[in-house]
Image (cartoon, rainbow, N blue to C red; front, side):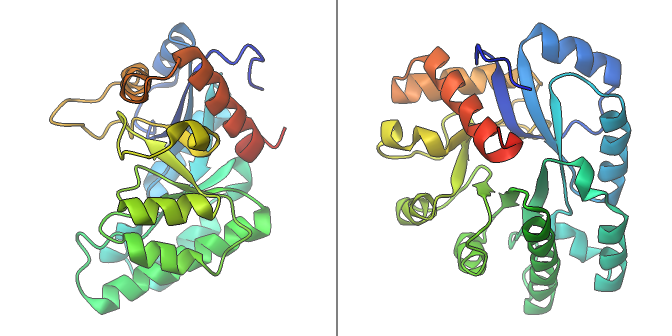
Length: 247
């Protein structure tokens, strides 16, 4: 349950599966951080399930298979892994999507779409929001999601053009900001469709990421758009309650 003072920092997208429970308990509470930690493969899912059972204050979980899992595993194997994942224990399906940076050939990209669609169907069945990865595949992802109009969609660190950003927002999707990127016009009108993230432990501009980097990400966002940080924290937590916690 979110504290009704709405003064915490929410990190909508990060990967905590290799961190220790005691460290997370201390660091998140001390720094007033709430986090949604996502899996990328079956191994990270299993590690997050261990953390999930620890009942650590301030952590929520998103379970899913990252698009690049198709590089080393067959569709049959990945379908079996999807059956192993207890999606009921998560509040979202993620990190899922399409990634064309590494996958260049049509066959591999088609495999990504198969795994993506299977997870979208799971999200529809369970009525859970999705956290979507779109690297080098913005148009393909937006086109693919057209057929899933009932889903609540978060495009994490979305790298689309201004036109693609507008398309996503007009569809009602949420976009995450990582150190005020990507730039979004009319941010005051769009704050109800914004989240902020770190993508921990992924580095940023050559800088090693820390859990507390979410505070810097909020500071950058508020400075870039000249917004009051306490109001931003409140609005983003309300977005989280509305779409993820269904309060």
